[in-house]
Length: 308
Image 1 (cartoon, rainbow, N blue to C red):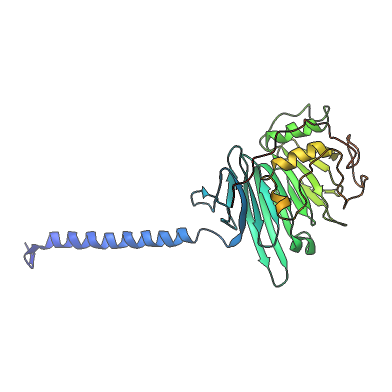
Image 2: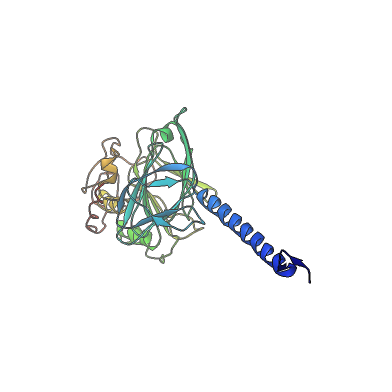
């Protein structure tokens, strides 16, 4: 048997092989740490208000608890637990929030401060949400989109509120007892409401199955019973029901504290930037500001956000 410095050669080779394998494994682990550190995309914004439990992560990374002033990145998936909500401010001034048991992903976000222009795509997977576009979105309409199971919302400098999931059907039926009685609850049911036009020319264009439906009047809404289905005809959501939905889609006073249009707070209220009248397809509840929408009085508002 060959001896190397008093050690059998076979044992010496085994030791060296084990050392080489260990070094290789350590290198792979270190590389994995580097890759893991680079999973998060570019910074997109900050969590301004977090009520109870919200998480964020860029897949495949594990979700982590989202805190006030916590960073939000492009490609992040943000989720909330029961009785929870989160409000996010993006780098271009856009605000978006989600209510309890909701889930969204920031599929794309690019902001050019030199041109004061931004591009974004936010994918709403489930739950209630509210989107208040920033100034760059006003200047470059069509550069922001919200993706839902029913289709895509093209933003024209405005405030949009929506619900994805079985609760969308409940709200649709609340708009009028006759509406939605033939529909069944579905996880992909989608309700979209134009909450504020943001001024002249504002609104949304909803694209589904190759058809574009414009919404231009405050309170105008669309409902899709399930993924792939055509929408029900546009209808009006009165202030009482609209306020209930809007308040459930954000932490308490989130938009008000950020200087944006707050959720509707009283039946019969009229947004002073949008005169009475229905400029588009209407429904049973009349023109914006005409009175309560026939829905229930609504749940109590969420608790105050955690102090900063």
